[in-house]
Amino acid sequence: TGHAEVVQVIYDPDQVSYDALLDVFWGKHDPTTLNRQGGDVGTQYRSGIYTHTPEQAEIAAKSIEKWAAKFDKPIVTEVAEVSKYAAAEPYHQQYLARGGRNGNPQDPSKGCTDPIRCYG
Image (cartoon, rainbow, N blue to C red):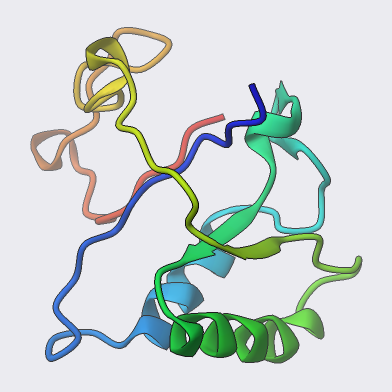
């Protein structure tokens, strides 16, 4: 279908900058693997930043330049304007909180203090 599995982040720029969100993004996944994250392989698992404004696109491009030296391989993350966004099916919503692959929900009561959890 050409889709990418993404998370749309809604944030308050008075509380956190777009650049700071991108810093978290770079630290939470491998942007150097084409069409793959962990054991998940396919174009839907590509690394991407999908922007809503030209300013976001410019900040994303600068962020790639800033982070490029921190990786051993080139960053392959695509930057493109959002063309269409659709929420995932209900069974994909709150995937980790509902137990993810192994049926073990991830939440603060289990000692998780990381506000963004990745699986894979």
